[in-house]
Image (cartoon, rainbow, N blue to C red; front, side, top):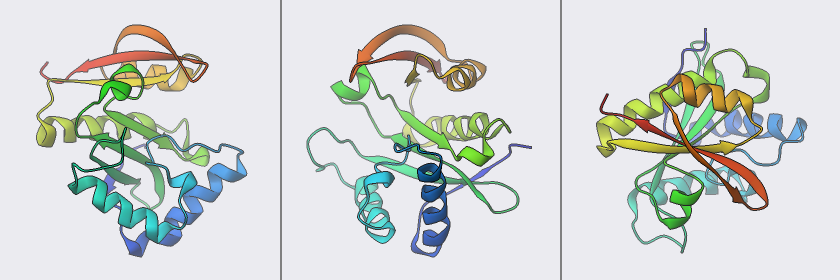
Length: 176
C-alpha cells in the first residue's frame, strides 16, 4: 500500500491530469503544491510544454529556477500525486519553498502515498542533483506533511512567516 512510481508528464496523460486537478477543485483546494502552477494553467497541453522548458532552461522568468515535475502513479496506474524537484534554490526558495514540493490527491490521502512520493523524490535528488541535503517546507498546521517529512529524516530548523502564514522549515541529510 502506498507504493508509487514516477513518470514525467506527457500529452498521453492529459485526461488523468485533468481528473487529478478536478479532484482538488471539487475539494475546494485551489493550490496544488508541487505542481508548478497546474491550478493556474491555461490548459494541460500548455502546462506540459512549459514543464519541458523549465526542466531544460536556465533562462526562466525572474524568481523561477529549473525544476522537474513528476507524476506519481500507484500499482493500479492511478495518478495519486505530484512532485516538483527544484534543481537548485534561489533566495525565495531558500526562505520558504525548498527543493521539493509535492501533493497527494484528496481521495488518496492517509494511504502512505505522501511518504512514498517524498522517498522517491529524495532518491532522485541523491542520484541526479547530487545534493548533500534538501530543504522542505510546509504550513505549521499541516500535521500530515510534518509527520511525512520527519519520517523521512527531516530535522526542524525554524518557522518563518510567508505570505501571512506560518511555514516550518526542515532539512533532510542525504548523505546519511
